[in-house]
Length: 184
Image 1 (cartoon, rainbow, N blue to C red):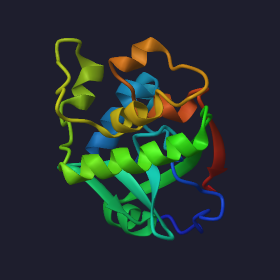
Image 2 (image 1 turned 60 degrees about the vertical axis):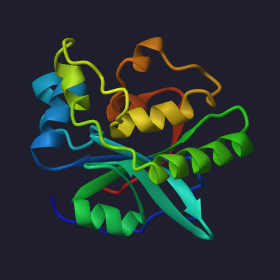
Image 3 (image 1 turned 45 degrees about the vertical axis):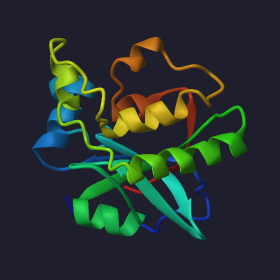
Image 4 (image 1 turned 90 degrees about the horizontal axis):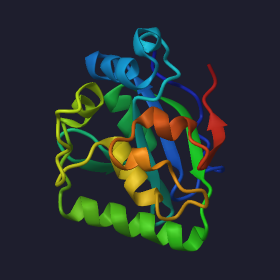
């Protein structure tokens, strides 16, 4: 996949927005298959395989995301150039009280970062087998975004997402609106 060279929409972003991404490699391919429509989803690069949250530090917008081996906070440019991801879109959750949500996002990501929240490597296996138990003390990317947003959205999420939520679930859910789509 060629490196993404579009200009990031910093003027449109605000704290708490979700970034939905795709990627190359085995892990994104498996994610597309198990969460994006089976084998038909394998080559569909518009299926989200990773997600994170926009947060702020001073006057800078950053991305907080769960990635192996633990949560990271970095600029959009650095993170996606280094990890070979392609931003598909940014989504804005429809929340009851933006100020409360904004503050919660900042505090929640800060706390996860301070305690060195570890990545849940078994997370993808939850989508393949019901026998795999979620690692309650670890998180995968979409689990972090969902956990932070779920108590703040106007329209409640489907309860089934409490057990497992994929990046694609957040990409297509009615609890957020798409505010920017990457040019093809």
